[in-house]
Amino acid sequence: QSECEAFGLVNGASLILIFNIYLYAFFQLVKREGAGIELPMTGDKVFVHYVGTLLDGTHFDSSRDRGEKFSFELGKGQVIKAWDIGVATMKTGELCQLICKPEYAYGSAGSPPKIPPNATLVFEVELFDFHGEDLTEDEDGGIIRRIITKGQGYSKPNEGAAVEVTVEGTFEGRVFDQRELKFEVGDGENLSLPVGVEKAIMSMEQGEEALISLKPKYGFGNAGNGKFNIPGGAMLQYKIKLAAFEKAKESWEMNTVEKLEQSGIVKEKGTQYFKEGKFKQASVQYKRIVTWLEHETGLQEEDEKKAKALRLAAHLNLAMCFLKLQEPNQALENCDKALELDASSEKALFRRGEALFGMKEFERARDDFQRVIQLYPANKAAKSQVKYCLLKGNSNNFHLSMSFISSQLVVTSAKEVMFLPGFVCLFVCLSVSVQHNSKSYGQIWMKFSGFVGNGIRKK
Image (cartoon, rainbow, N blue to C red; front, side, top):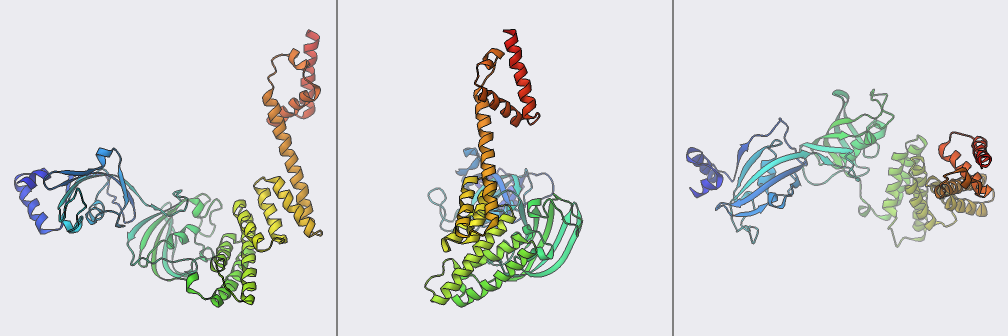
């Protein structure tokens, strides 16, 4: 009877409940129906309130008492087994009780000091919200995964892995791509697969089937895709099944000879991508060289020379890729690493100058271009870049000066203007012209002179 009271039930319902508790290791009772038909999927982040009690009614934990919803990723083993099973059957707004025997809760060990060994637990759980797993590094919601069928094991494809997948792409309910594919991760663009699809595949286990939602950045971008009749800025959905894969060898699995050999192969592959204008794919290949060789030590002299040359080429090529992709910070980082390998590298100095120019660091960029000219006097491009840096730097300083002077002046009458030094008056005129971009310097100056003249005449 005390157990029935703990569940808030009486009479026939009590008998049915008690029977089920002792017959099964886990029992769920819906106290309030939820809304809609959609249920959380494995990997979804769910948000709940809960109150946990022992069979005698003793409270041992409550998110409501803390005033903060509890969240976890469903089906990932982050909570007790009963929760992973029970919450997966709930709809948004549903309130239920989960009655969990020890094998679906904390087992024979319990969870001291509040939960004794072999305890049957009762949880009142309310589901407020759930959404898919964000697979992006920046957690910008650009790649959202919802797992339909969980995969096997824990291994996942890496860069260069050979994968077999089934993909179905949809846009606004229209299926635009439906294929079975075999390819190496990193080559997806050749098959008209968005970068977000490859990133999603690298997070999947063998046999997994998932729904993937892509924002334009991870889909076909602002350009869209003519082949599939996808406009720019389109949100895409893909259903992907990873049938099988074979991981590419990791760095620690290869000896020196294999690393050097594979680095040469992917370097050529990256160069081909670069020539085709596929800078993102090219960068993936060059990064593999860095990963394989950057920590390689104790090499024979000949192998050391080869490794250094490959690393230098990889960083230089990565810098060029990032310049093309308009990511100057990444380009700068790779130029710095290239210069650690060869302090007088013409390409590294020039490309670092270009990266700094793109970051509006005109003085630092000029220094790099001047260094190129000192070491390589025949480099005409560096001479041109020095002029551009000087022009941009002076323009920047001029605009700053105009803004500063105009911000310090508050002209309230013609009398005050009369006593300002002439050059300051001119600065004011130029500053107004620069800021408003509506009148020529001459027009502004003429109006200003007329204003001062009127003031003098009135005086």
